[in-house]
Length: 100
Image 1 (cartoon, rainbow, N blue to C red):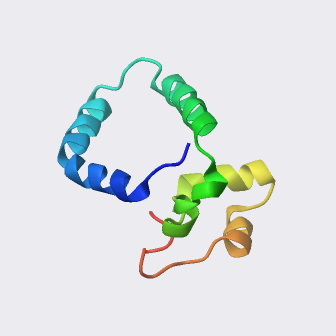
Image 2 (cartoon, one colour):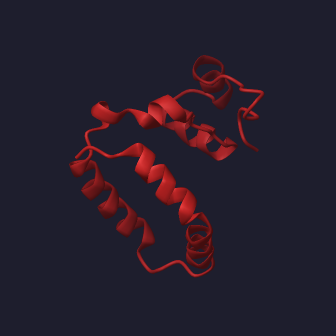
Image 3 (cartoon, rainbow, N blue to C red):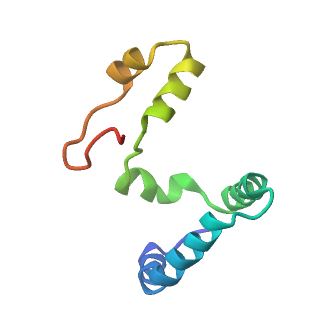
């Protein structure tokens, strides 16, 4: 499924405040099994989207890691957080690099 990014961005801008209110409510009172629901929706969405035909995420975003992320990933890889950070991460002053 091809996604019209221009149209999508316009819809996001138009509904931004409503979306923020909704996420605030979900954060205060998350539904039961939220993680499982997110996994299921994620799988359904990726069945419909050809990431390679769009690649917008790779073009417009950069991942941000907090200290918990670094610790979890480095443990999984069997290296220290410092070694993982030194080898794989860079600090971006404009985006403040690693989040606290």
